[in-house]
Length: 328
Image (cartoon, rainbow, N blue to C red):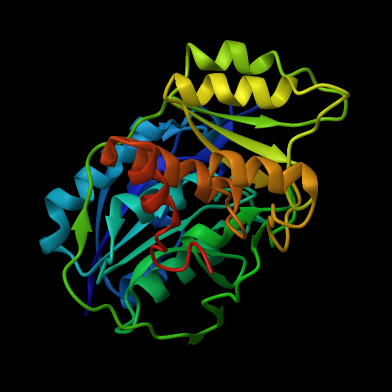
């Protein structure tokens, strides 16, 4: 029987009514008491690192989760992390970069309705997470939610209330869990797992809107180490009868701010070579673009890549190096 460590961090799954809305309040053992059948699936140990609404989760907290997993990695066969859904895709992506090539499964799950409620999805999601984590073929960082097994860098929350809250963006689901039957791709991990314990959270995402002033980049230049620009369509920067955006980009580059351009369209990714508004920027400044990566994965990868690189060229090389299935 596999030995799985459950790491709890809060979220809706552990929430209860406070009189002022739902607040995470249940401890690890209280969560497990609602799914007694999982003790027949695997041996379970628990640790509670946080008890937070996922809106209040930060990259530094995910770094601490990764450090804890590193500390106890050899003691367990896999890990199940309960987490709030609102930032779960960011958490999964961050753990994907902090614990690379993991031979053991690191599974995130949660719920849309608290586990103490009658019509909750929490019990099924938590049980499924343990089913996957205890399987011989499981590996890597995954989200298990709504019967789906989704790769960490491909997950995105696409529904605010429905039980099938997460989608796998432009990449097939790793698999499905239907009752006692698991259907999923069994991936083989070669080599040792690699842990990282440093990130740079001085990153901002700017979503372009029509008519937006480029002056926002003056604010960014003195305060952030990287900016991710969510552009329109396949990607580019506007020029409204002037080159204000180009001038601001030049100033960012001069100050050493790393820039990545992505798209605000959920599917099919960027391709800055299609239109003049994208091609002229890409050719002149060699700014990395995210192609088919999700914004959540881009944010996590940039935070991971910044401390691993000293130059813009090194940053671009790291960003463009596929890690797992984050970039096709």
